[in-house]
Amino acid sequence: MASDVGVCLGHYRELVKSGRYKASSREAAECLSLLFGRSIAVGEEVRLDELMPKPRAHRVYDSPLELLTAGWPTPLLKVSGPPKEAYAKLEWYNPFSASVKDRTVYYLLRSVEGERVVEVSSGNVAVALAAVGNVLGKKVKVYIPTAGRYVAPFLDFLGVEYQVLDVSMTVEALEHLQKDIREGAVHPNQFGNDMNFIAHLRTAAELDWQLSSVGRRPDYIIAGLGTSGHASALGFYFGVKYGTKLIGVQPRDWIPGIRRVETGMKWISLVEAEIVDVSLREALEGVREFARKTGLLIGPSAGAVYKAFTAQRHGGVYVLIFPDSLMKYALLLEQLR
Ligand code: PLP
Figure 1 (cartoon, helix red, strand yellow):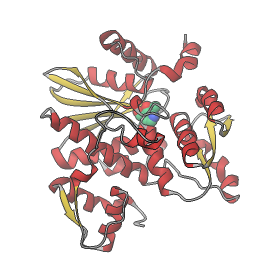
Figure 2 (cartoon, rainbow, N blue to C red; figure 1 turned 60 degrees about the vertical axis):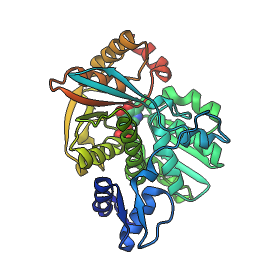
Figure 3 (cartoon, protein in one colour; figure 1 turned 45 degrees about the vertical axis):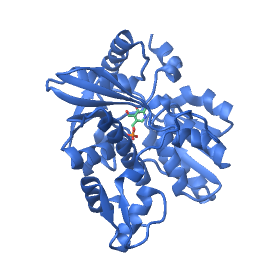
């Protein structure tokens, strides 16, 4: 396969810009095969439309994986009108981890072969891997930094092996899985596997399809940064197509699911982004304000995104990415009281 997504960006750019693209080289065909999730021959022309969702009107599904993929698009909710018009992408409508990470894990697991899978995660990826692993019959083991221990009960019910480590950041847990890898486990590697970025080019196409239905194109996208896969792919797609600006949110101190850019992220350098800092206190204020306004309980990093939005001065159309809801953070919130 094309070893680095960097070589694919030129091909993806042309596809996003013109809506269709002919795979005129082997490299182009390989890059498009990764994005379209099927084998594309040299000389074949593909259309961006193929990536748009095909929802089931009656919402009847044959299998849990279909519930995920044919369940897309996740809802897009208008949360404010002009001059700062905003649409929030509600990613907790994904069925397994109730978060955006169902998407990442679905594509990561399709890209690796092997029965045993090992990964590090502070929360949503662990739950999504355990869940999708069960569906695909894979044996999953996850290493969790201390702060992610609130997902342990979910992992117990899902029946996967896990170990909570005495480290504060997910990336610090990476060295612990070397032994499992030596013993034959595969590592999907959410921090380095380009399928993370590519998965979210599909999320971008989905979002584009939704916004087009109401005649909108985003001027700004605000998203939290974890691995940066999600935000970078949205920034790339919408930047190419409409000149949209990406606003990446990083924690001033600590917010579950996101981290600071200087801790190292693979994809954020592929796009231009304005980076803003939000503290945990501000993020929880965002959660509170949003709950009072809409009745919806959004997760802490979504609260951070909402807070970053309320601080924006420019008018225009905003998309706010809300990765998950508040529900799985009950234990954490109890500790913060
Ligand atoms: N998971 C959660 C709970 C998040 O809040 C976020 C970002 O806001 C992410 C993950 C980030 O996703 P990514 O790893 O694609 O950067």
